[in-house]
Length: 307
Image (tube, rainbow, N blue to C red; front, side, top):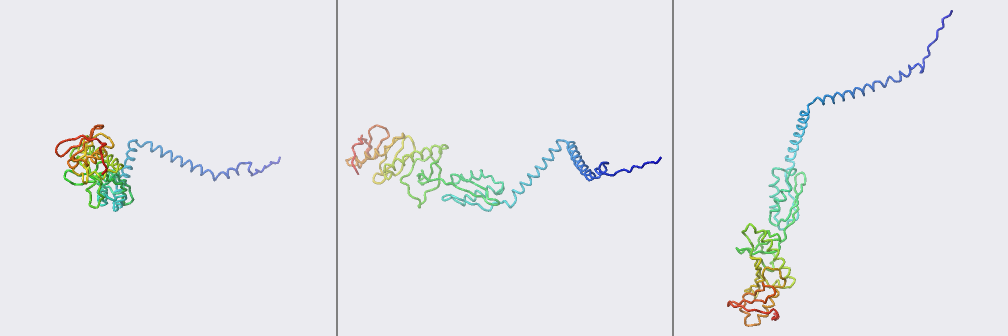
């Protein structure tokens, strides 16, 4: 009996070809498995590190960063070399620069306290507000809003000082300044409550100035004495400079105009040269005319004559 030899067929049906085709993909799986295993081992290793140690490492990194930041901020690179000033007309640019450079001498531009610089600048004469900005690497820019002079105060020592509507001294009146129509007297120069009191004085002064300008009688006033705001007194100017008008403290528009109307009428009488004061401080009462002889007379405002 003959033995049959069956030859084995080589083909895809045996699976050998497929196996060969997949040979190149197995290393990729091993690489991924190796990477995943490494990540798992690292996470496992980190898990063994105590929490306190991890916090300490983070703290050290933060400290190193802070030290580096301070070193960079304090470097000569950020030292202030230029101060740019805008808006300063009456305010001293030299005082502004000196104040700024003094404030940033240790901190440099990068770490400069801009709010503190602004407050220090606002203590200078004429500076109402100051906006301060950095101009890196070595500059500071200052934009100034100046105070507006509103009145001239004659002090007890006879000096003439400009003040603004916040009752802040701005400096002495210069010979080149425009002369105000009239001055303010009775300024509180000593009391701890001077700022509050003087602010009330300047507010009342400006109110009267506005009223008298509208009535075109401001030029007849030399100064206003506001030592006592309940007893405001007006010293007249020119030919009437020896006459004082007492207008009181209550806000009653037209009192000075009323007093001048009486004065103009009395000037036509024999009492005219003897008038020393006119009192219109009591509302809705007759006007009192005081004479240098010490006598008083009551006048009717209707008794007036044109000058």
